[in-house]
Image 1 (cartoon, rainbow, N blue to C red):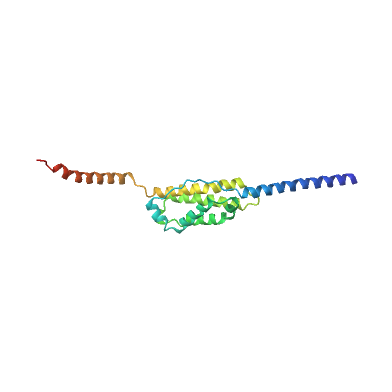
Image 2 (tube, one colour):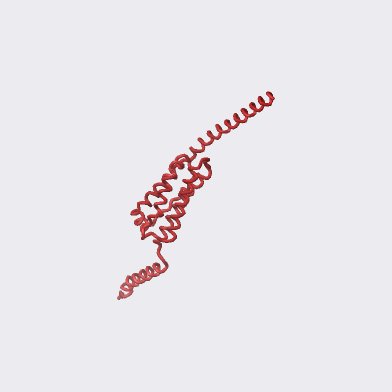
Length: 187
């Protein structure tokens, strides 16, 4: 009986030793992983002048642009630490869309941003962090912000009717310029 107790104690001790070694390895892996930069898109959508004019008056948009710009330079640890402010800023973006920019498409894109930011916050505050999932969602936020800016730009794109009016004005202007030159006679 004493042998059985002694053997079970040795087995228990050896199993706990192996699990603590695994925990040490995971801690080292995690610290290395936490220093890895977040992979994001390098593409930047530029707002049209009309859209930019409206956006610079919108404080939540400016704050969101700032958060996205910072996120592009963050590592995983910084992303985890700033997930709550990112979520709050994207939430305020949704709730403060100005009337001049409010459309279903803009609201939908703002909601996508807020949802991604909320998912990032939830992933960042779990007991067991999933570094790959956090990095993936964090990498999607700048891309979704670009999609949001595309929707803002589309609000100010000219319609077919606008182009036809501009073409008619151009033709009328061309006709008035070319008429006097045609009426000059050479003798």
